[in-house]
Length: 131
Image 1 (cartoon, rainbow, N blue to C red):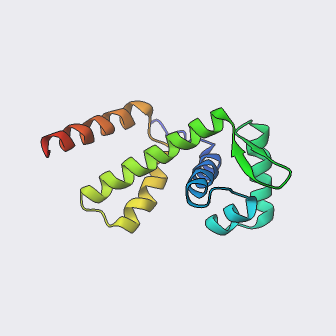
Image 2 (cartoon, rainbow, N blue to C red; image 1 turned 30 degrees about the vertical axis):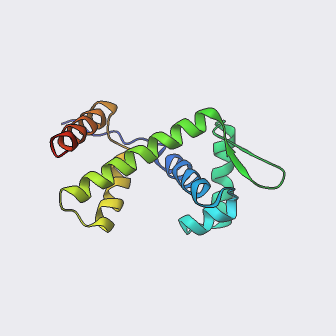
């Protein structure tokens, strides 16, 4: 039997997705905004921001405002796209909105590019049929 190897960067992706969401909602994002949104402690968020900065996904200005690097924004947008498409798809097949959002968050990190592309293609063809 083979075992699924879960992606080790799930937490990193959750932070990137949250930063992108908050940027769209608030404009400027600081660590305190992330802590409040994710219901995490400020020290936990601080450690995560240090990790994201070291991986060159974000920069933090002297006033505490967080900005994406090019690679950070691309990764955040990819995760948000997966989450949005999967949530909407689950809702469209009858899953409650609350459950769909939670399940999409679980699925988005482990789904292969091949499977995600097939799901997007299937959704697109269904949408074209319904137009």
